[in-house]
Length: 346
Image (cartoon, rainbow, N blue to C red; front, side):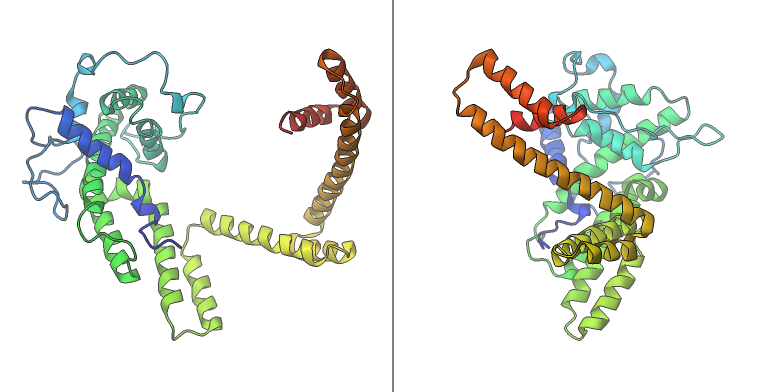
């Protein structure tokens, strides 16, 4: 594992630094950070930040700007990196009183647009997010806008925290734990506990697991068996979907090893499948692999015939017609489209 703070909490530094630079260049005027409806009153920037001063420009100021203050009109088309992508769903959750319920999907909505920073200005991307949030009714809409402002300001502070002196490569587990703690405090200072938990709880659980792994592997007093037991215990603290994904990955890796081990003994491989996947799943898997082997054999035979055809020196429509006829001899239905697609990348 790369020990240069590659945990999930230390991603998106470039975006935060870009936010800071953008603000320095493009946000003149009143430099006091406005309070959002969801932010508690405080005399200065949240404690624990690396700013050293409360007087500064924060990107949440963009939320107070009228739409016609956005530099230029929003282009009719999306930034190129967003073309053909789908907006996250499920972010517009509200309770019985109409108040916003913070969710991981709401953060995904923010990041969906912010990922295009550089293709459009921050002000334009904030306006795009604002228009998405307009589907909410009050009070949820105002609350979501407040969360957006707090999130942008958090990311600005995060970039400065991670760029601070002393954040270097080769952190030991304890230094990394201190860095993670500072980031978590920053999240809760700017977003509040409920929103920070909704946005980052899974990410932080993975960070905890990775940190525990580092500590366990660094503990020279542990024997192999004790180390394995502690690793298994640490994994149990992961959210269930993450645990299941890790288990599936291990099962796939184990199956690849079994395929190599029993490559000359199909019966033994089937016994292994049934023991690890159950009889029904093992039977389906065996059928899929048999179909794939049969396809591979036909594909190899087809390629040999096509090589012979290419040696004839046919050109233009005559060559294309001959290849099409050859595909029809070896493949049926949708298989022909698959073969044609494979031909196109040869």
